[in-house]
Amino acid sequence: MKQNRQQSFNKLEMMMLTDSDRSLVFKNELMIDDNFDKPISQEDRDKYMTSVYPFKLMFMMIILCTKGYMRFRCNLQEHLVKAGNVIILFPNSIGECLESSPDFQVAFIACLDDSYASETNSSFSTKFRNQLARQMVISLTEEQMDEMLFFYRLMRKKIQAPHTEFTREALKGCMQVMLADCYQELSDMLQISGKKGQESRSQRLFQEFLKLVQRHYTQERSITFYADALYLTPKYLAQVIYSESGRHAGEWIKDCVILEAKVLLKSGKYTVQQVGDLLNFANASFFGKYFKAAVGCSPKQYQKS
Image (cartoon, rainbow, N blue to C red; front, side, top):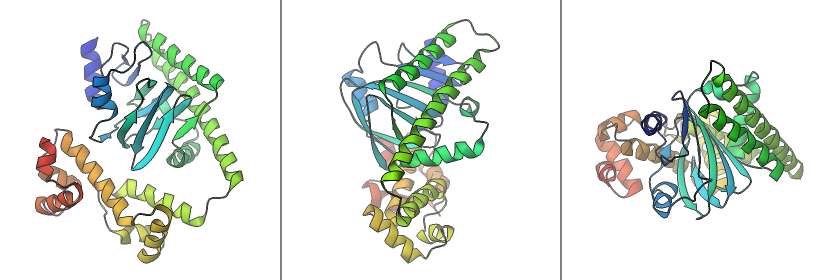
């Protein structure tokens, strides 16, 4: 069983997660785990929960926090998750664990196959993902969290039982119910927030800018590209971004590029030259100068650190 779990860890690229005795895998496409039986050791907290290296998710993940807290950064925006919170992370998100409490207690469900999280209403799914970009952490009542944990434990039971031709459908059903409950709670949260104050045009532009950067930063580093996509002048977009965030638009773009570079360099799969090519740099020398100016060391030094 341990060998099978490790194979799935490699495939799912869960480089920030430990291989615990609570790990369960179904057909190398869905994994669930928790640390309910014992707290995270100091060694694992230092290695995984406050890692100095960013990680990139190649899978969807639902995280249920039942105790303690964790500060993390996802796609350059910082969040706090604490007891009673749910986080939903989508593929290609880049995360950084900043801090966790000694009693941090979580359960997670991660799936490689999109069908586990597919919805019949695709436009609703798109709307939900856009909302999550603004409000990634969802707060639940005690009753709602108990219901989430009920389905989580049911999934554990289904994976541990002898598999049938309908096991996959049962697991998908549990996931669908959990996501539907999260959709509803997030919708309610945003409706209440909307009643307190409408989002300004500049706030909407800032969020649209961030979404565009997440989609195109591996190919486009010019503010002109993003301004054109938003039908704005580069000067006006730069003013809006600085006004809303206190940071220049170029800094947001650069930080996304550097985060991706760090992930690729630490993956062990690519040379410095290949990373530069993947990020659309003209040559390795240009990539090296760009990286060193931002990080303070060369890509090769970072890769070996």
